[in-house]
Length: 244
Image 1 (cartoon, rainbow, N blue to C red):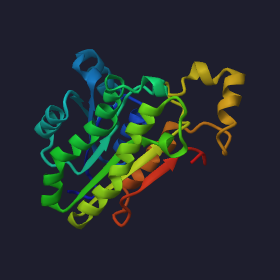
Image 2: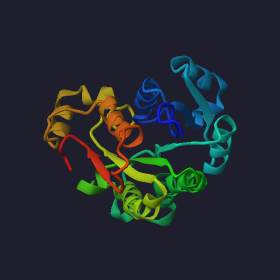
Image 3: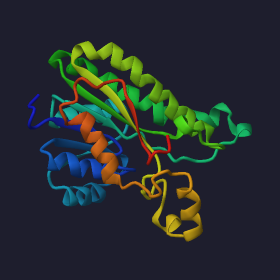
């Protein structure tokens, strides 16, 4: 691994804070392998490449297939940043059957861990790795009527500590960014938060009294992934304006 030019694999690159992470990583000299399901459409991949000329778009399917495609471009991957995209849809207590909750856990907990499983041996061999899961602070503060989403995010947050204890002696750090109240179309669409009454109701829960910008959350990701933060691992960092 070159300290100046690390190679990063980012999944769900067009979702949530993914675009901000791509922009920041590339500006700091990282080679970014940006994976996203939408890149199966050649026009979508070309458009993303046009906006981010220094990025390598990767079609995202299963974790194993996606990692194989990434390694076709760069065999040694230093940084894994898993987006874990899934709509935060309502699930009341009466709806928590297996067929409802399964997709949340598959996308938000099982898939991120699977990505790590495909890359960890190479990181161990090089005695270097940075793993950052893009998670949520929702399960920390609680989200009534969104239990399946919160539970799946909590499962990933819970894995961070155990993984860090297992992998730290191999030079691999494992951390998570637990974001909330970040103004993106996926969770807080512009059309919604521009409604004065809705905006006021949401921000009444945020101590800092404003929405976060994706670039602010991306800088937290970069701290764990690109800065000399090797002595920091096993952390779930809340980026939520003081909410949790």
